Image 1 (tube, rainbow, N blue to C red):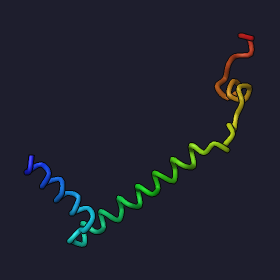
Image 2 (cartoon, helix red, strand yellow):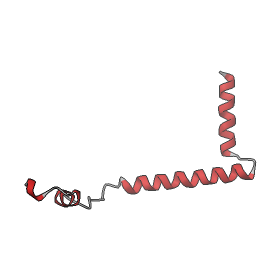
Image 3 (cartoon, rainbow, N blue to C red):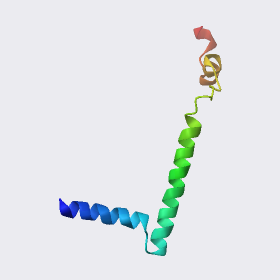
Image 4 (cartoon, rainbow, N blue to C red):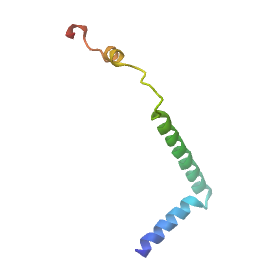
Length: 69
């Protein structure tokens, strides 16, 4: 169990304090992606957003045949 915790601690330390320029760049890119994903999640799940199309518009776009009605 000690070895597992030591490896997890080393992994976390490598992410928090990267030593090489490549590791620093990777951490920076991952942080930017995380911020972008969180922003998209907030934007797409905002409660004040109303649907753009109603049922009649979706029926027209999907292409339900007029003869069926």
